Image (cartoon, rainbow, N blue to C red):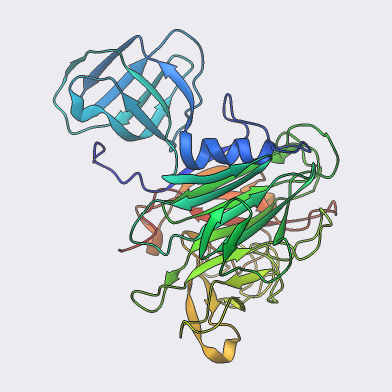
Length: 393
């Protein structure tokens, strides 16, 4: 690996320079997924580069790049060649980006460029406003994820165990005809909407605000909805059917079923198969420590900060093997639920980063406002491990 730090977890959000818009236009979501999952985006030519005291600076005079602090870029064309590949950004300005390196001090030569690094998935089939994506990582279950982006305001999402073209496959999840709904916009064509995507080589989250707005801070009290598709951190080693998909069960843009940080019921939560591997996809329950409501809002573990130690409490989100009576199947990777209330006024709405402490020492936490999509009132806050790795295998 080119970088001395882990680069497996990557994120992008709509306020990054040159980020592709998600709005009420057919095909807009697929264009954004192509960039985030497969191709990368925001290519930037580098004028000069130097390594000093364990830090490489790439300089350019062509204006602000897409890269922001903590993002992962892919460097190409550099000499020494060991500098090429994925690097996690530690500092940015309008004229340069920096990242850590173990290479010795000195000038860097070559026809150097960088772009936002893709997640490491492939696009296996495509049609008019349709696409099928699949993780390349051989350690995972590698589900086929079909996106139908034909409708201006709503995308349809399904998983398949196998596929022969963009419309035909077997081992469908969920059993709902057409799949779950992932809302893009409250109106067509609409303006560019606020979104965050974060994931690794085996799964990713989409956090987006269907209510028209370019940033969470200008949402006027309307939050983002958070969906996930990909592998769980499975309780059972070698679990071949632990791919998970969440989404809304109805086409209404403000529906919050399937939001992995919100509702406590099982609407919009599907596993590829039960742990025994028999049959087809199953609806599954989820739970968190002390709370079944929205992260950072419902407050099953009291108010933030805790009176005794001023602490912020975070916990994993457990997915069950169907009903709770069947026991846990695994956890959602990288997602951290807060069972306290009162966070939004302190933490804020937009993407924010903060250093972890205690059990999360050495981690960088990313937070974003989540909750109700159609009401202007106090919302919750969802957290992610922004650097990873999310998985031990």
